[in-house]
Image (cartoon, rainbow, N blue to C red; front, side, top):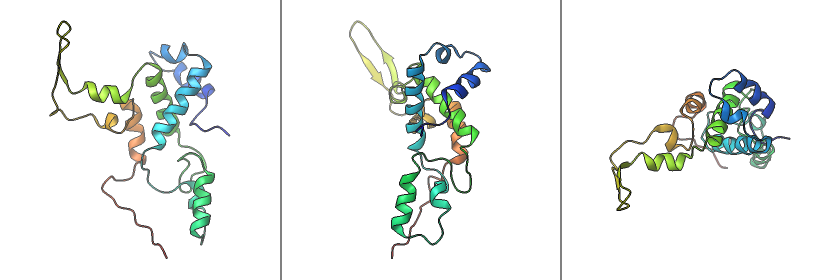
Length: 166
């Protein structure tokens, strides 16, 4: 069982039709797999609408059965009554993997947004902490395009989910 979204072959097919795909094209198979694993981890850290498919299909389940079903599906997708991973999730994974292969680090990018001035001779850096961070970087997603693909699947950040405990 593969623990990342998409496949390297499907990624190759995707980037075959995308401009400026040299980073993906010139990466080794090993690096592509590592990038897909890392991108999947970033994707799966987000809070999505609905439930994992294995939990959704349960009827009158105990808490123990729900926890077991949750653990049996390694990835966050598919969700609810879907049995397949949505294409936009796979494309988002390829785009994040591409950005990672290209050297984008969301943490460094987020920190760099606050740099107002730099010097070399005196090694001086001035930060402006008033600048609003970019949404996709706040959430650890290295690609703005991938973020736009992921966003419709996300739960409302202001919503509160309650589970009844008996």
